Image (cartoon, rainbow, N blue to C red; front, side, top):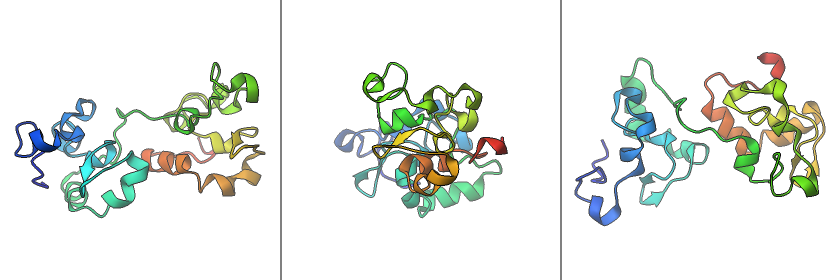
Length: 179
């Protein structure tokens, strides 16, 4: 659709490389496309507008303005914004805080309760409380131990990880009471 020439055998594939969306097999068939070609906004590392694009949450604002996104969203009866097959990071992976069990800073700072909260396992497709950390008291964010949901939530909604989960999940759960 963009005629960028970065598909395998494309006019600019040798010069610029093959676009990661053209080779991302984990999403083959999504939105009736080949590999990541019709779900490129969900693939990290695409080269759009001359710049390497980051992951979904970081680039989505640009992608929703793109004619490719709009065309595909109109063409597909069962439009997929973010495929379930794409890897979804837990908060400790995304934030690289090292507070998960066995993490680099777990001995120094303690194991984060989000990584051990098994009652919240699979909420927002995460492990334990890893994708609903804002609802868990005692997480260490911004260098300080955070209190319960009501007092910390205003800070959480400005967090890049919260935005990532919100964008990735079709059935987003803000609080376990909604599950």
